[in-house]
Image (cartoon, rainbow over all chains, first blue to last red; front, side, top):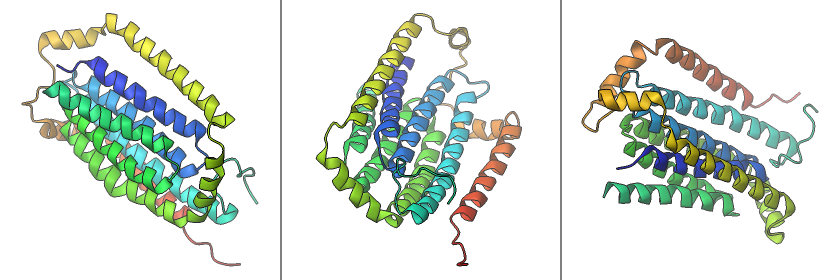
Length: 101
Length: 180
C-alpha cells in the first residue's frame, strides 16, 4: 500500500530540485522550468492529501486550479522573456539590471 | 506490484528532473522536462486522481512545453553563448551555494515529514474511520464536475476570468511594437 509519506518524500525531492534550478540557473527559461517543478510538487501534495477527502474533493479541485495558474504564469512569463530578449539580447537575469530604458 | 510501479514512476520523475537541472544543453533539458511531467502524471494516478493526470498531460504537453520550446527557439543565440560560458567553470561559487541551500532545505523537509508521521491529522483518521476515502472504483470525473458547478463555483469563475486576463496580457506583451 502506498502511504502518504511516499508522496510527501517524492514531492519534497522534486521541490528541492526546482529550488536548485531557480537559484543556480543563469537562463530565464530554465528558471521558469524550476518554478514549474515547484508547482508540480505542490500539486502532488494536494492530490495525495485529497485522497482522504471524498466529501469535498478539495485536493483534486484545487490541483486543477493550480494547473491553470501554472499555465497562466508560464504564458505571461514567456511573453515577458521574449520582450526582454528583444531589448537586451540576453535572457540571463544577471544582465537585466534596469526596469525601463 | 503497485509499489514497484510507484517507485518506477518516482525514479523516472526525480531522475529526469535531476538531469534537467544538470544538463548544459537547454533543448535536451526541455524535452526531459516533458518526461518529468509524464512521470508526475503517473504519480497522480497512484493518488487516484485520474482526471488531474489527464489534465496535466494535456495542459503541460499541449500548452506549456510548446510555449517553452517556442521561447527557446526565439532566443537561441544567447543560449549558445551561455553554454560556452558555464562549461568552463564546473562547480562555480553560485552553484555551490545554491546546492548547499537546497540540500539544507531538503533535510529540513524530510525531518519535518518524519516528525509529522507520528501524528496524522484528525480529519484523515476520521475520514478513514467513516470510510470517506476515494476508492479506485469511484467515478471521479462525475463527482468533480458536480463539485465544480456547485461547491466550487465561485473559485471556478474567478479562475476563468483570471485565465482570460493572463492570455490577453500575454498576447499584448508579445505583440510587435510598431516602429517609431
